[in-house]
Length: 147
Image (cartoon, rainbow, N blue to C red):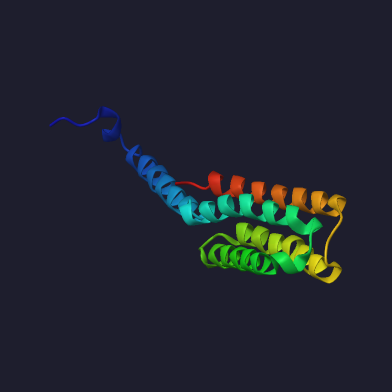
């Protein structure tokens, strides 16, 4: 009979068994604490909006009426991206980033543009940079998720 000599000694097997079960339990528990998994749809949403939103915002020095449909369409896309993030399990932080982008950056910008008719280049530049930064943050968060 080929047994490991160390395991034949009294009192040795029990600690090995204890630590093995403990390690297995901890690793199983840690996997349940991991955030959302990588989601290509979420990354595609971020990538598309990273191009489309700044392009639209650059047009805000012109009349809102000429771009109202495009503005509404992009706001809908941001809302859809937010809803997608919100519906993903363990994705609360990224969903909150989308909510901030929509509610604190994009929606107020569009509302201000609509009410003013057009915006100054300075306002457009500052707002556009904030949106770019927010989208870059969301992109980093999406890319950091485990695949």
